[in-house]
View 1 (cartoon, rainbow, N blue to C red):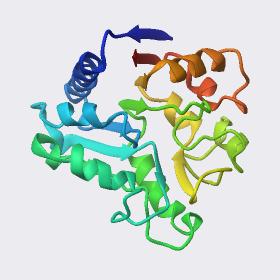
View 2: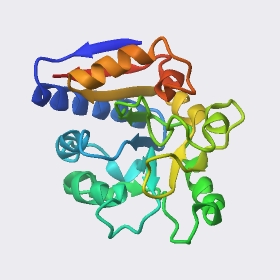
View 3: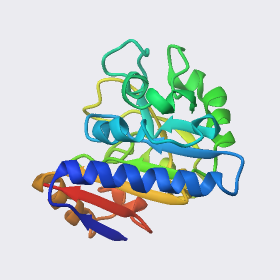
Length: 223
């Protein structure tokens, strides 16, 4: 694990966008396609704002979320909505979005179709994760109903997840998929999340799910 500390957030956003774009360009240099999985939420948004303007062959890049709330894309809580507004624009508008929402009443009814899309993009070239102060990452929440299965080596690429405090069901990439990424990054900001990450290093994964993803993880932190 490598811990990268930045003097301010703007510097971190710029440098992280460069790191991700360089990894994608390297992959496209020796493979027909590259894949990028990203967290939703507000923290990675400024990275997307920079990344979308990078000059690379986006038509050969598959983009997907690390997790998604089971809500339609028009819902303000949709992470897919964020991607369309801040990443799949400018030069990156030609990238291929792999959906994690299927429009059915329950996520389980769409897992087969959505999982096939995820499998086609594996192994992931780059993954950009976030983390909550409860030490969850993607939708791998402490206390979630299928957390043990999602953390296991036999987990499918995609699982439905329900967790205490979550307002709606989620779908999430599982630990084997995240750990299989060729380049794996975590972005966190503020002292509270830095303290939470430090706590997670000594906790079991069922209490601190980010613990299951720490191997060869590049952490990017700014105050």
